[in-house]
Length: 188
Image (cartoon, rainbow, N blue to C red; front, side, top):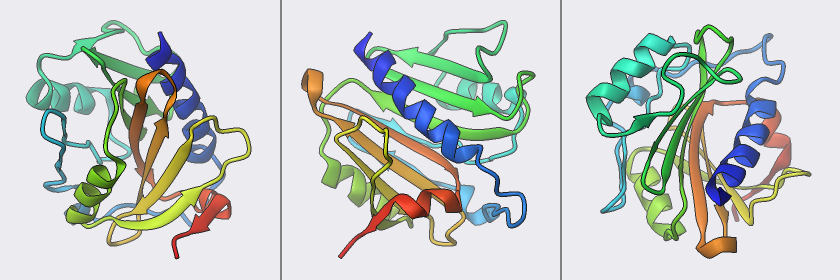
């Protein structure tokens, strides 16, 4: 239940940033950014799906190929424009631009277990992401939210951590949202 609340808060913040008006100057990831990203944390391996704009059918095919033993929590419909998969203490959520499962906006990988933030940072950097600093959203309840950008600056990764309840964390990916940068406290 705690993990659900934590991920709900994370998704709400990300929804606001992912859905802000960016129509004048949209950014799209290069094809190279989407190939081969693997965040290997030992017992947790994340192969993020970075094909933003993809359909629900594309996401389902990806899940069958990469996470076949995860449970689809809403197999017959999208709940509030998102698709959720769970396994043990983990949740993978996909947020779409419409209720029919079109136009993937964001993917979030959340876990209700402690994690070494430096280990995740190292893995993101190994995969070509650069640490930009801490995001200080006004109403975000995470203890910390770190921002990373892909090498071509088109994809942002947000690493959030909640110390309560033994430590919960999420790693989300979306197209760069320039709006988020106004909340950035840059790294030294």
